[in-house]
Length: 408
Image (cartoon, rainbow, N blue to C red):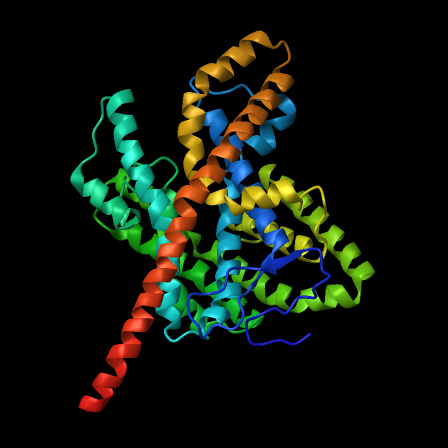
């Protein structure tokens, strides 16, 4: 098993590794990063968790939740934290393959834009139509432009975006912008820990500066809740996880019994610590409960990397992970229109627990196929378009480059 800087060579027999992903459009790329089953599964679980959270809140009136589900269900926003941790991990994992290309950062930028923008732009259009007919509401051209340019995170009181649940995209796209600078300065686990500590200090400084600005209380509250620097530590946990997993995967293959025991221990520790955070027991010395939850997500990533527990890492969760972006953008409107169905279920089922579970099952039964559809019709063509754009630029450079060199 060989290693290159920032890459993982994973044994073929490992259950948590899938076949090679589609190779880059560049002919210079000889191999692509291998897809990690546990990472896909965690994406799927994160999406499923957010869906439950929004089922409760979007429904009018809010869905009743059985007592046994209160603590976990009302904290489904942690699914977004898990998304951020996984996103950073994935960027560190896939970037070495792009470094083999002629223009690594152009390839990276085009891939990230065309991965996110097509479906998001579709939902901008659908949201404008939905809000016009359902709420008789309109959105200004300024806000449409802010969303289309992914800059709405800078606009106080509009940082949530008018596309439902799109605040995360505003944060994610800004992290894509700063990632090249992070990547070039983060080459090992110690530098990744430094990134975590520095990012917490950056947010502390930002919060301090915000308190001295002459802005309204509403704008200040908006920045303190949604401003991009606040979420940098969550991405930093993903970077730390990457460098640890990079070393742990071959070790787990050499010592599977020990790795399995350690993985289960970490998974149980993550669950115990998460419930402790939700109970308000403490935040493990971290300055924000979001960061304590990110620490729990970090442990879950490490745990499933060496012990992909079948209950969590399976065909269904991997499928949901593959279409998780579609699930995330599709689900708020679907949940909204399913509101009358939820009320019917609750009105005709005597048990609140059965009604709640039935509503969840119904939502997933519609959302997953719908998301597979939008993934195949919107997301995949978008990614292919990004590859074609990069390939076109490479071909153009191959023709123009020698001419420029001759002119000099």
